[in-house]
Length: 546
Ligand code: CP
Image 1: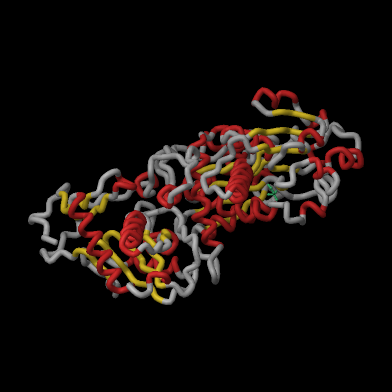
Image 2: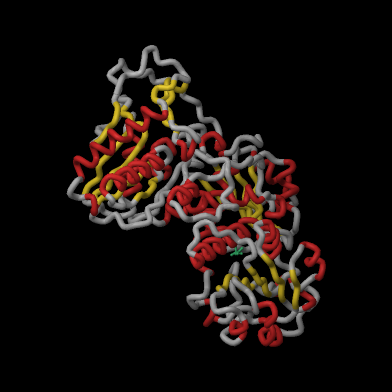
């Protein structure tokens, strides 16, 4: 290939569609010459973002020439990037790794569009090795622009400039028709990444409408998190979130779940390094507290816990004054649980830190709602074998003490927003008719409520909030509303069971069901950490609202 003309000015097209096609052909030629007798044991894995369409093209061209279908995957470097340690501004957060086959014993050809310092390759190899043990890893890049900082060399390379080194402030941008609508290689001025919207390598496209799973290209689109306008300082309730905002969080969760799926120890990220997270719980909590604390620590934050019994509220200080004093010590995120509805909102209006509602009275428990939505979505995608399945028309039956439940309210707002059909069931005294105005069905008959349920969500009977004796007796509740071996027969065979915890065993949910393979309860808890990581990361690193 000819060298592009000097001087290299920003916006110069170095290679147009035709010459880019030739570059890919050169790469394919080099690869084929090397793997001729091994095509059956090769896998091609593109490094997000540009490496993915390039890997697909290489595999297609190899198939044209040899009729061999080489499996293609995508690897994300996000979790192993060393710039995650640096303060916000240098984030390069991508979607998740997707390798839908075993790489054990395979010859893996890692593919990237432009090779420069080599640090991306190092991160990609670290990530890849979490998925298995290939017999060999080779590297293919379209362009090797030099400037290496670590000892990495490509095995296959289509073009390496012999012109004098390209200045550091100039960026070689490879655009692909699959992701950018055009095939070309362009010189650009290096952009300073300043916030999450710019740093997420995203497509301005929600996943919620995607249906077609026919091609690998469609599948890889889920790797690009949808670009949404996130301009909230706080997370107060699902009632206030748009569908796009909910999906931004749900689509980011798998990236963080990866942190727990590591072969050895869970990895710690540095997205909240130097930030201080305060847990301010005025009511007891196991799941929410531990989950937020783990999430904050996995993101590299410093955390501390302030309970109402230990704080100066006991001496008559107002909540507002207490938080002003805490914030004066430069804290960043305040996670609030309170028995009174509206407390997080009240604090959020007057204070600088990001307020996250961890449950306020009977109002909302948004992170519980989000982790429930995520668990339902994952389950539906799994049983339908459709990675783009959504919750539209999925039947969710929520059973129990709806009146006192903030979990029910957050779930109702979120589920209706995502198009699910919600049925509420419980004793008439715990099931306000007003809910029907939101577009849900209410019934006092457990048999009716379960008859077409895809998901059965049992709520905890909140005996501590029952001031007026709203159900006659626990024995009667069990007889009429417990989800157990007998009552679950009313539900379709595929229906699964969820519960926010803590469970009153054998009151709202029988042990034989809670511990059965129809229960998603512990999955909910696992997902909670990833959801809370996503929430804290989005709030703290999205600067638009400040
Ligand atoms: N689901 C839930 O909020 O549990 P905790 O009360 O233990 O936090």
